[in-house]
Length: 420
Image 1 (spheres, rainbow, N blue to C red):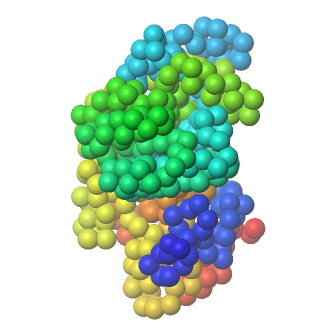
Image 2 (cartoon, rainbow, N blue to C red; image 1 turned 120 degrees about the vertical axis):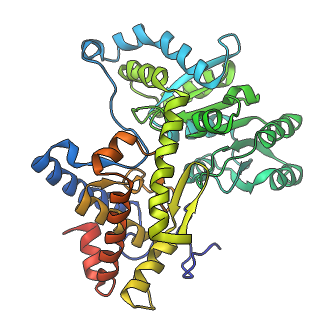
Image 3 (cartoon, rainbow, N blue to C red; image 1 turned 30 degrees about the vertical axis):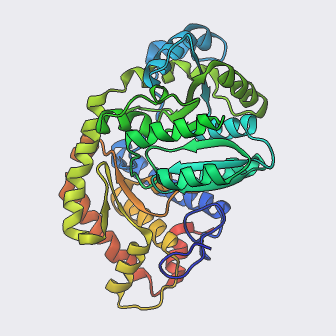
């Protein structure tokens, strides 16, 4: 069984251990409520600009005033579905002759609907990425009654495909949860190997749909020859809402879309105008700008964190294990009273409470990673906050505050859960 650096066993379906303060998703929701309390206090006192969205995600509703009168489930799809289909196919590099599209309540909804449609109980699903598949894939495979064999890289994937007798689906993630990228030649090879075995390929292309082409000069997803792909409209160059966009083989998308409607996983049709606006507004230049700003922040953080800052070509991260280790060192303690995930959550809460910094930790429920991520930072938000050095100083000060709280676990519980 996987463990963190401190010997804590990872929770089922998650890449981190849970601990006593945040043992489950119910507790994560209570943590969200405490975060909302800080957000509300700041906004009531100083307005919306008192919150600085450094999550790397956009969860707004990009509708113009003239679109509001038709933002209902009857008129909006009638006027905008064709535009949505055209924009989505262009986004993925597809063609109207071969491909169809669908809109989901979120990317996880698209992943679930795909597995519930294409995977049979007893099947094996092979995940392939540079590191590991997102927890939403793990849960979708389990919901379908299948077994996940997760692989890192082409060699592990090829061995698993050859070894497993009943593979129902391949789930490929080109930009992993760890933000490592699969090389283009490996992407093509995975698809070819799977298709040679008669196995369909679904791509969880959460951010890779834009980052792959814009930063690594990779093909659009459907140009890789995959069967179905889904991405999020809140990630890296798009501006929300938090919806999942799917495209792929006409017959497959038709079946998956139907299952989504049956299971309540589809997006509300009044959101089609927002989806069109988000897709059309996504540009290579914006993705490159977000990465450049992130690298500016990473450079400032490196001065504070040194080698503990993990960097990829597009993002930086402070691992939860390192957050706890730094806090223990600053506190002069040897025995940790909490697990790394709780240390990461506490650091995220301090950044929000004391500086108005909103990190990706307060987006996922439960979070897909325990690391504190620095990714796809909007330059206009960084400028409003005071620049990269101000961000680094805020993080450094929050780590010190966390260290001061370690000797009193009750204070950490109150920080994360309030009076709950």
